[in-house]
Length: 213
Image (cartoon, rainbow, N blue to C red; front, side, top):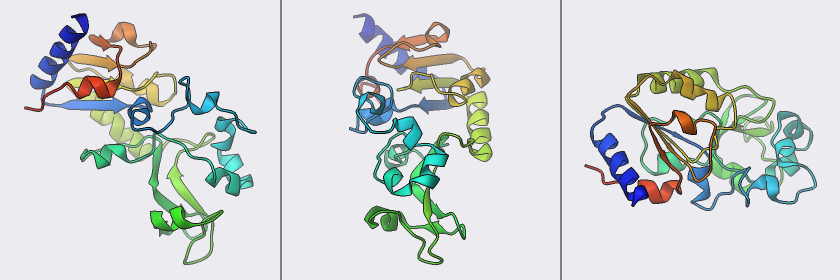
């Protein structure tokens, strides 16, 4: 009954606020079958010759590009756009955008997908890199600024599917000055005590119960 009451309160908050921002993490992807990093079935708990955080680093990509491209990750999957979201600030980039490290040309995703080994630019032969933020790299300043502005202007901020353990992304919540902060995550987070509404259930289950007016 308590959980039903929380769903009803979430519905009320969504119905009574106009400027709503959703801040999503890897938990949004896991329910679509894409593994995250830190959960029980996540990449950090699977056996690899090299730790996932090392494989997904800038220096490893440059040194071992073939091994890098053989590794699959998440949180950069384009699911928000596929669901119809029109304004998305991808803090960690997207595998749906790729560019040549030599000439800077944008490269087709299908070219990357169909390549065996390291994909190469059709124009100059340079190595292609997915437009994702790897370990040892900084977040895109323009994207970061857009996310900060959106959060600062929001009346209602819904945070879902994230442990809020990775910075600087998790630190963006400090810019929220709106009416209500909703936190939806299966596990505990450092921000639980700051939430106006805390729902510890799978995010797909929760948002699937919400009616769009």
